[in-house]
Amino acid sequence: MPGGEINIRPMQASDYDAVLALWQETEGVGLNESDARENVAAYLTRNPGMSRIATDPEGGVVGAVLCGHDGRRGYLHHLAVAARRRRSGVGLALVGACFESLRQAGIPKCNIFAYADNAAGQSFWRHTGWNARTELLVMQKQV
Ligand SMILES: CC(C)(COP(=O)(O)OP(=O)(O)OC[C@H]1O[C@@H](n2cnc3c(N)ncnc32)[C@H](O)[C@@H]1OP(=O)(O)O)[C@@H](O)C(=O)NCCC(=O)NCCS
Image (cartoon, rainbow, N blue to C red):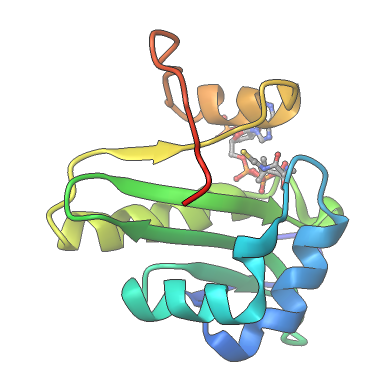
């Protein structure tokens, strides 16, 4: 892989600062109050070992994704690969590691949420075998 070997490992709460920095610099990743340090830590605790990061040989975070499930469906959030490391298989490796965790948990299907105007992101998902459920609408209400 150009630029050195990439390592994929489970995301830990202590990775938060580096992961947040990557998400903040990545187009197509929308951050909100649910991405505060304590919320991400809670997500990792509820879904142990499922979210992943990719690190370069120096230990820098060059990729990240949140992965979890609710007992029925799996979910991926905020898949991001540093621009200089794209098109080298990092994104697919992160998703593959998450799928391995979901398989082990007995979860048969996985959902993602993508911005409708994120054409490049959608292109990646379609290219890697994902289908848009165009008959569905995502709705939301404040609790
Ligand atoms: C989408 C993203 C995570 C892909 O990461 P990546 O490491 O470049 O992807 P990979 O190298 O693993 O690509 C896997 C396959 O998808 C293809 N691919 C990657 N990006 C693509 C794109 N934008 N459009 C079409 N195909 C794409 C690769 O060519 C490769 O195909 P191949 O297996 O036939 O060779 C990365 O571009 C990114 O961080 N984008 C911005 C954030 C974003 O949009 N995330 C999704 C939010 S919903």
